[in-house]
Length: 590
Image 1 (tube, rainbow, N blue to C red):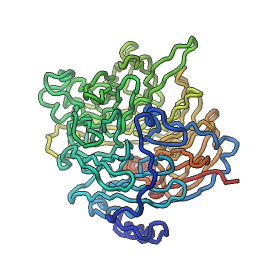
Image 2: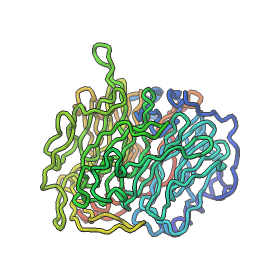
Image 3: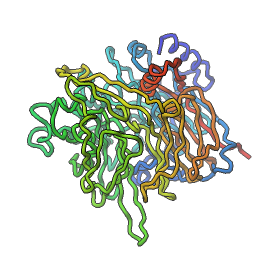
Image 4: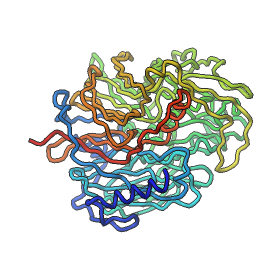
């Protein structure tokens, strides 16, 4: 992003009537009156009208029970307001980034109040009906910070407070009514490669957060804080130290720089009081440089919020050599059986290209079955009891040898979230296929704050990618069979929203379109072209009996990088418009 672009956006934004008096750093425009405090009970069973967490509910299902917008009337959706997220932080380093900043946060809705984060560290509070801005919080980032992934994935609510992480690895609590800072805790030193982009998770009065930075040889962790005081309660590392369970899977002192970042919000099993977090790649990228299973990288771990204890784990692939971060937590599903019993499931579409159905009964993850959902040539098979993969050695990176594998490091899916409709037992997910990658391993020495990779990174679209790369898939979790697939010529980086109106909403394509599909058939029912690409999750909410659909444009980061490889391979040119606007839609009022 150039300074000229930033200044142009600033001028346009200041011209907006709703925010003309606002300047970054000023106090709140208006305190939110009659703010509804967010209780443990509301988070455990949110009202249908609200969207209180990143995936609406603790189980991560990303599904709205609202029914006013249906397959029959969705074609009548019209925009009721839009709100620019700028002006942006003008930190000089943002103009030199290898990829543009991206809006990857959902709007969070609490009884007519909307909260949204901006990729550069801002938080905005709006009226969810009119788009009028209540307040804006801006954190000044330190000079010298050059974020590898300039983004933020949202806020968490608890009581009368709001929690957000920052690109310089802090966790901050704000007064939700005014936007004033209540407390500020340092997660880690950003100069050593730590940064944070996830939305925190709050459960039983504990605010949990983790950090990105696997590419810098960090030692990943989840940390819990007292929601009221900000006091640190525990810090649980994803890379065990000698003598801790799993430490035998790390040779020598490789555990000190083993990676294992936590950069997507976890899901929470209220009954078992267990928070499920996805753990990312090991460091360096190439497994030959750190022989062993390398726990708990590329795994799901179950953490007790009260103590920080890791009570269970499941590793999707051992000794990762493909940068397949498995940071998205499994969707928690209670599946009714034919005889009145309930299956307690954790279902996950892994970045490695396979679907996993796991049993979570009693707070312990156990493998049930798995199958590929896109083409993958690394696994020969999964062990039918443990789910441990057997590898095709020709697709495993080796020192001094270029090795190809499919899919590429961006996987069959990246971080964008799926959605689950409990009425039809269907998972809807955005995927990318017809792309492969390559790595060539080399020895690398660790230096704090410097990339610690051991290889370059290639992404090569196959010839089939000329027809399509991205897709939207629907899967029946009872049978593990695909119900339908809609293909897109471009990649698909769109988090998914499903609704009880029988609809699936998704953006994610390079044409900047936002679409609605028939959840049963996959037929496209409605679409609109917006001001930029969409990689933020859509949400649905209701105020005064009217249902709304909200989505934010803001293309950048890995969507940009992925498209850059495609452009280079096919000789294409042109950028996807970045955008940077909250768009809200509803049916016409009668």
